[in-house]
Amino acid sequence: MNERFVTAVEAIYNAAPNPASWPEALQAMADCFNDVGAVLLWHRDDGSFGVIASPGLAEAQKDYAENGWSLRDTRSIRAIEQSYWVRTDVVCDRDVISEQEMNKDPFYRDFLARYGLKWCAAVGVSPDPQVAAAVSIQRVSGKPAYSDAEIEMLGKLGRHVESALRLSLRLLDAELVKDSLGEAFNRVNIGIFVLDSLSRVIFSNLAGRDLSDAGLSVVDARLQAPSGAEQKALQAAIAATLRTAAPDLAAPPKPILIQRENSRTLVVYVMPVSNAPDPRQAFLTHARAIVLAIDPDADAPADPAVVRDLLGLTLGEARIAALVGHGMAPKDAAGRLGVTEETARTVLKRVFAKVGVSRQSELSTLLSKLVLR
Image (cartoon, rainbow, N blue to C red):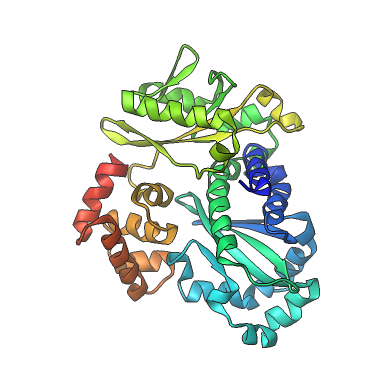
């Protein structure tokens, strides 16, 4: 296992309860590729957005935001126009522009060259059904384009970023950042359980305690799922996280689904905790894992990240599947995702082939069985 990869994963999870650490986590990701830095971007469905850059890219990111380069970012514009984000999870320059075009393009020639940059690889993630996010790694002009192996590594790192952002994005709310971490946890709308090295619950927030009658409870200081199979899966995930061995830490995080009567399936994630010298994290001194329990909106489509993990789809395919499986027409799903109807139908055909169905109604039934109920 690449030592820098493990270091990056540790830094990513350190940033989960401590959003101020994301610049360092992004730099650790860039270090996996011996690159200059990385940028994290997210966009909510209400139009709000945010950007965090690693220290080495702070000046370039400021220039990009303040001087309108986002409107001339050829690779970003083409990736959206050509619907790459519903085709694949990682997009790089070679997907959208030739090297000959780069030499003439103002974005490459006048902006990137000013900072000695040229190449980029970006991974899309889905930390929340209402949030689209991506991490882009930036590379200097003197190095070659990203290789297939590097793109695969970035895809793996992206899964850990997605997991950490499930907590971080909620804490990045301006009101919560001012609070102590315990107070902030109590004000977010997902269940949070903090575990020590013996898997004992040493803290649970208000939303977590409210789940005691709805699928996840604390019994003798340990988390308890309703059924034997669900409890076994939960214990295995916690044990793997507490081991903190490189293979366990590097493995892509996967959800644990807890079925409930007359309610949507509860989605549970387990992430490691790294000790950090942050006063807001004082109560995490003995913590070794954080369990997130997400109670999905009963009237919303399934979480694309969960659909991806359960059905073996790409994130883009899962976004289409979640909307169409919820009853939305392909044309409307395409409009929601900003792609053409033709692209949506092409992706939907791939989804049907992968999961073994042939109709929208069959996809809806499959998602209902696996994800919604």
